[in-house]
Length: 88
Image 1 (cartoon, rainbow, N blue to C red):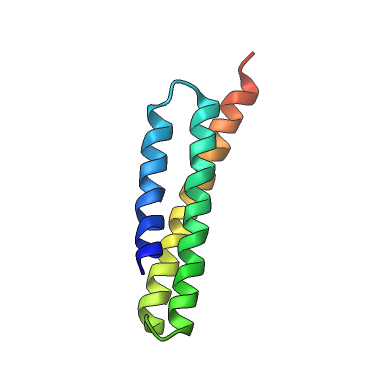
Image 2: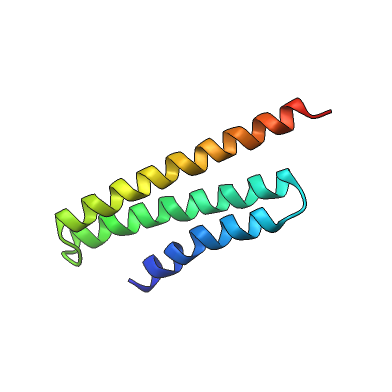
């Protein structure tokens, strides 16, 4: 469970750190790290359920939230990438 907590803290921390950076490329790099941490959370949740640490209902609700957050991160990445492509 401590690994799950660390990954959960990593997602918003990397988004915040990337936002504070001076370049869009840096922000994109930190968003990628946040997305990786989110994938780690999803994996840890599935394993936690298989090991009977988390019930199916709680896992499904949390996975749904993680999926929504993943869509938001990917949307931000696409927007920032587009901005980079449009700049000289």
